[in-house]
Image 1 (cartoon, rainbow, N blue to C red):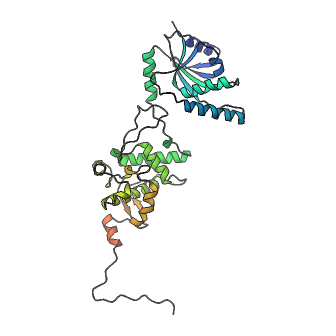
Image 2: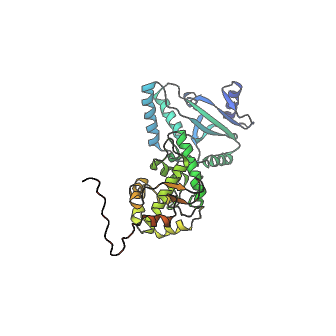
Image 3: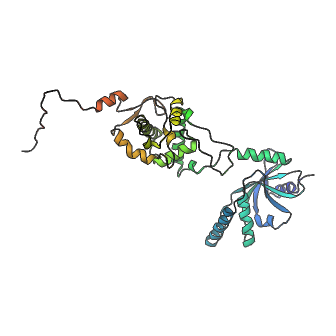
Length: 338
């Protein structure tokens, strides 16, 4: 026996109000008025068992935001697409909510307060049984998690951040930890422990650095990152651990063990909000080294980092002031004005 909701979807296809997937899968999409669905008492909107718990405060906040927006504009806020699963063997009219349970609850409350149409986009997939429904939900939730740190103000900033991330990943590939795909959609993926990085942590560092400015190249951004990395390394070598968030010996040992395609280990994983932030190092860096041009040998995505074209030892020796010969008197400066 086919689900009554499956028959409803097929009727919509015949009336050209619903579109079915062209590959003959039982996936349907279209627009609906939530009032029309909600007024039929046979229709049930049920969050799936393995979905996240409902937060009533979130629902209350969204209801009020919609009421305020409607009072100002005469329109509701955009509810986006709601994803439903329908079990073909289920005789009841149950829309199992795969994604959008808070938005459904918001529309339900708004329908009680207003008779104005509440349009939203839906996607319905018909599955054989509850086991298949749970497998589909698990697959859906293993998509790349949403994290606000991965959003940028412009397309150019997004492009630049992606290029720099790929370059740093290629150079220090073992310091990165993969994003946890078991995290539910719309939840923030947990960060790895220091001194490791994730894509999202690296994006946070880029944002806080202010390097993603219009006109900057990926090579220029990478050069500044390498410069700051060297500054943190020198602070660690000088045992000024309080300046870099007090990393433990275990953290520092992990840094040195990580393989890389450059001569220097990656210390960027020590950066964390409240522990070590870009501004702190930027304020210290010029007290550590002179303002010298940075050049990356071997291209923008790897190679040794040098300043002024000299090696680290040569650079250090060039900064030393020559000592006066014993017994010689200091030279007097020429007077330019009498």
